[in-house]
Amino acid sequence: MDAAIDRNMNKYHRKAMTVEAARELLQSRVRPVEPTEVELAEAIGRRLAAPIRTVEPIPHFRRSGMDGYAIRTADIAHASAALPIELEIIEHIPCGKEPLYSITEGKAARIMTGGMVPDGADAVIMQEMTEAVEHNGRSIVRIQKKIAPGLNITPIGEEAGEGTLVIEAGEKLGAGHTAILAALGYNRVPVYRKPKVAVLSTGTELLRLTDPLQMGKIRNSNAYMLMAQIIAAGAQPLLVGQIPDDYPKAERMLYDLLASDADLIVTSGGVSVGDYDSMADFFLRWEGTTLFNKIAMRPGSPTTAGAWKDKLLFGLSGNPSACFVGFELFVRPVIQQLQGAVVDTAKTVTCLLAADYEKVNAYTRYVRGQWYSSGGNHYAKPVGRDKSSTILSLKDANCLIVIPPTKTGIVSGEIVQIIPLDGALIV
Ligand SMILES: Nc1nc2c(c(=O)[nH]1)N[C@H]1C(S)=C(S)[C@@H](COP(=O)(O)OP(=O)(O)OC[C@H]3O[C@@H](n4cnc5c(N)ncnc54)[C@H](O)[C@@H]3O)O[C@H]1N2
Ligand code: MOO
Image 1 (spheres, helix red, strand yellow):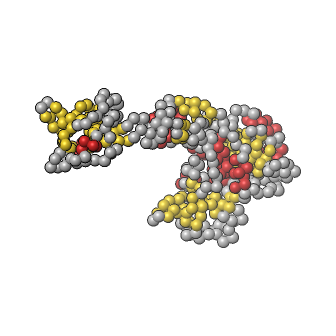
Image 2: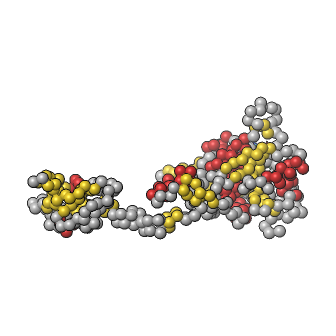
């Protein structure tokens, strides 16, 4: 049964998989969703579904880099303060105008930054190096110094020739990409459609946001937290609601969702060993393949995932911080990959730990932290209460600090790896 867990196992005896192995296993199963085409403005922040090549050189005409005069450098080769050279101005070339004349011996054209350099000219001399005079009704430019050929002219194709690959498929369209696409006239852009991610919650203790608080019950914060994480990852969340307490009903609901048009299903809660942990039971009984039901990490050790046909089902832990970490480590890369991203989950940033971390642990810990730079080094320090059940520390975290298994804790100044939470390491 490939890398999946043994069906004869029960939920009380689980074999922990490493984070790395689990991420690789997931990665090997994900294929991008279908591409679509949208207007450029709508494509911003999405991922490109096809490579973009230039359809013309950038720039596609010889462009002036200064306000000044297009000249022939041979004409001013002997210019000096004592013996200035005078050239006749035959044309004014603002941006957007194609020159009417070539520059021949003794002639010049007034030209603006971004203007098209006329044939015959081999440099643009900046205005500040010249003096314009009227002489017998003729416009003259007086020049006292020679300049090098090519000065202030951007040649055709300096940035890219025609047919150059400028954006790879799978890249996320930021400001720079958008500028390129606009410059090349891409009114409509091929992008991957936004994956639909269904979010479900388990637990009879969960109240809706509008319900009055009741003793022993809590409001469903995970569903909304996951919604925010899904949006940040570029996908469309579908808040499906609550998994019923009644197992046959829960099973029916999950199969219906698996057969729906959702690309991914994420549940929170009910994956541990408790009497009401319906997701743990489902993952042992269902017709899909359970890939893992325990990860050698904290928080979120009962994080579970499985595949049903081409669809992945995640059973994240109910504890808010464990749910958050499970999403960042396992679900976010899958969502990126569904949108064509090339994900390298091994990438981390090296930091110096800025405070002692005293907890001991047999598993790797992913501690909510803040990373920052100071004096040429990156530092990371844990934020808030480091418990799986906490909510408040999540908003202040900008990274997860990876604390390897330790019997002693680790001290301030030691080197640690961190995973930034803004997805910056995902191309
Ligand atoms: N005997 C054992 N007990 C537990 C173990 C264990 O190995 N043996 N593992 C612990 C660990 S570690 C974790 S993490 C949790 C995981 O539990 P579940 O993922 O099954 O989650 P629940 O039991 O359903 O809930 C845990 C906790 O989270 C709250 N919760 C649930 N859903 C939401 C939600 N949508 N929004 C906010 N908070 C939610 C729930 O009320 C519980 O307080 O199990 C340990 N136990
Ligand atoms: O996975 Mo539980 O934290 O790891 O509380």
